[in-house]
Length: 280
Image (cartoon, rainbow, N blue to C red; front, side):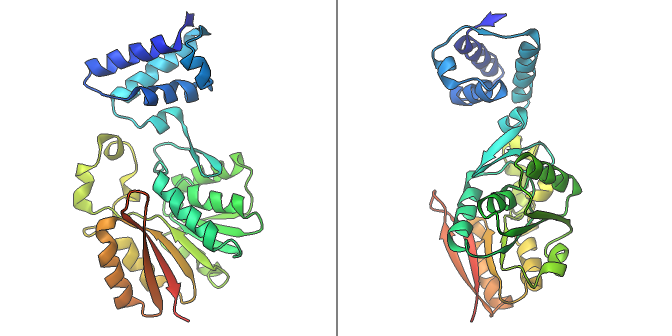
């Protein structure tokens, strides 16, 4: 069946609006482009495209999933992050642009280091980006979810990244056998206050793994455990919530007088990153 891409988008828009869903056209264009590897120029020029029946079924399935609030990245099945392409599904959080900022800081400040740990790796976004950019380094990637580690390992294979080791377990426990050699620890941990989980967008609350988001009553559960287990002498990069920044500063001063904390803002002006440097 030969169809024009813009006519498909118009049909999608009308069906979504009829269902009370206001999804921008550029999102639908991304769906059409990425689902079928279709050049954007072909969409914009509205050229006739041959769509087999299986493709039409695929589009209808995608529309149904959008109507149920499923995230676009899960529907497409992959996400570009920094210098890697990641398979994503409901086993892991969808990597966010703010986390790219965290990786950029690590690569900028620690490109001469050789041993890294990514705690709570999820899809492998942070660990794989570092490992690919620094092929002579070794990256230890941990997670409490065996399902997440399975997907992260698959992403490592797809991106042909071998200088990485996946380890199952909570917080710093999995890297204890390697802790002496680890120089840099990075983490985007669960940091959302439990009471706020019910206020998250439907696409997040209904589909993404809440265990990777739930930071406990005050959003600080991971950070407390991490600071207690953290050995001296490591450089640490953490992603945080803006509303927890002051609490984290106080926690570091209370538990770790051998570290100095520096907060940095993201592109939206929110305190998003915490860097811990050991006191010499």
